[in-house]
Length: 291
Image (cartoon, rainbow, N blue to C red; front, top):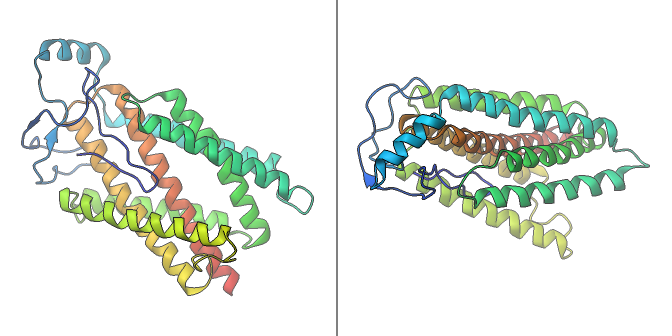
């Protein structure tokens, strides 16, 4: 099963020969998954099924090792740590005030564009690149630092801490729900979430176009009740994609993905958590500014 996030579609894990996609239909392995629960009952393709060069594949995996939950935790910690570090540095070094707001915004927008380009390059690579992933995290952190500083200074003081705590609460809630199998990630779930996210992104694009061509507040998704509703939908979609990320990790561990694929898992988790943070920040900012 391919995993996706709200910003772009990511490719699933890859076999050692560099190819992707299912090799054969096989039932999921029986036992305990990466998050302490049995894998879902959906019969999904094993991207690591044996091929004609199975012995070479096994030898390569034996030399390089297979992915574990510890690998995912360590790489995710490194990626998120890079985001947090550069966000804090940009907050301190690029203060958003009456004299430097233009310069800070310019740097933030440029950093966001670079992060997007790096994420796109990684999304279409056959193998994960730690340099690209950490580079994305660094530039994304600069963007988040500028946006968070501006929001705290001009719209809703103190909202950033609340948004961070809200993001952590959403992530913890999704993890518990996934572990308890209250959320069942199967093909139907995947298709529904992908369709909903496509519609959501199209609305975001329409709002951006209306804002750029003189509609001022666009479609009204950044203020009032409509803005709150749109933000809540974004948080829910982010939570759904986080469940897909957990399934992505669980499948990789169950099917013996190469250890380097833990960077891909870390990349997915980071992009999804960034998405959730931005949506939570928007909702809380609207709520505080309306009071």
